[in-house]
Amino acid sequence: MGVLLTLSISPVDMGKVIGRSGNTAKAIRTLLRVVGMKNNARVNLKINEPEGGMRPERSTTKSVDEAMEDLKI
Image 1: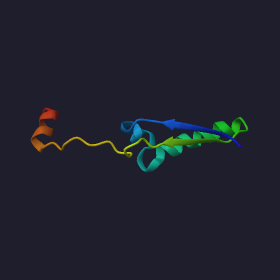
Image 2: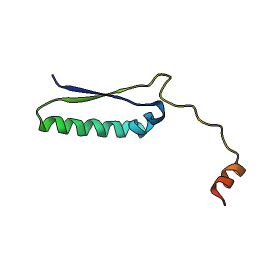
Image 3: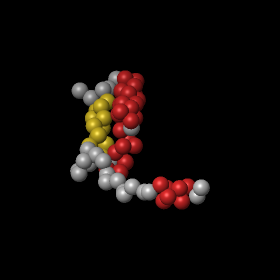
Image 4: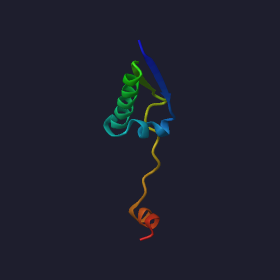
């Protein structure tokens, strides 16, 4: 019936590929559908969720002083 593209990515890059509210993933799927329509094929994208969940562990929170020192203000 069509073409299924499977995308496997690392947990660190998962947020970049999906984007806010899934907008980036929706845009990628829309572009693939357009390419498919031009070639008389149905193209779908499956994004494999990495093991261990979608969100990588965050580092510890910095104090205001540490953040200001990073900014060199």
